[in-house]
Amino acid sequence: MTTLFISDLHLHESRPHITEGFQRFLREQAQSAEALYILGDFFDAWVGDDDDSPLALETAADLRQLSDQGVGIYLMHGNRDFLLGGDFASAAGAKLIDDPTTIQLGDRRALLMHGDSLCTRDVEYMAFRAQMRSPQWQAQALAQPLAARRQLATELRNHSKSMTSMKAEDIMDVTPEEVVRVMEEANVDLLIHGHTHRPDRHQLTVNDKPAERIVLGDWHDHGWCVRAEGSELSLESWPLKTES
Image (tube, rainbow, N blue to C red; front, side, top):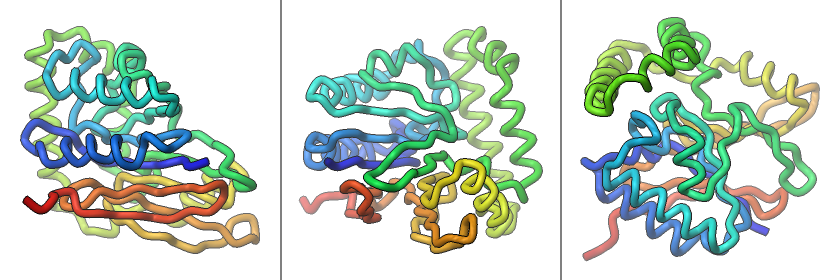
């Protein structure tokens, strides 16, 4: 059976070609899968499950249709949509999963992560992440009116872009020692994550044995997924804009 993994779609009203590409992915690739894992930053921002925007409602309906066809859908928080909650998951026919989560793929144990917690050299971001993941901060944010939360999301997005533009590239990538540490702790030889927008397959050594880290790409000009057929994996991409 086929298991698919995607991340970093950053769905937003200003990028309809990505939403349309995702809808095609659901129709043409995902409906024949056993499970679909969305590993964070599904939305470019998420202001709460009471979001009544057309994008939020239509995306939940699209996922629900896939779920009703028997495909298991699993959602992980990213650094942009950490406020995704149980109400959206229920509407979408999906299940929220922890970051990290370990699953079985054929005869391999795989560790699934969004990937931002691996970027430990970015000290400023790690402090920001801790604040955003605080239950107290999240409760205070969700208590604000929807319009205020939408404004807050815009401000946080602009702040993130500003900070990112001033940082060295290697600071924003994963810390190799942290990758090995979390894989050893989970006792796995396979890690699948997103966040860094640097799709690739990396060979490494964990617990003195060969291991692999697969990085998903962000959906911009191309869609990206990891396809698992049992324990056989491939990293795939395709153009999002179709020929007119």
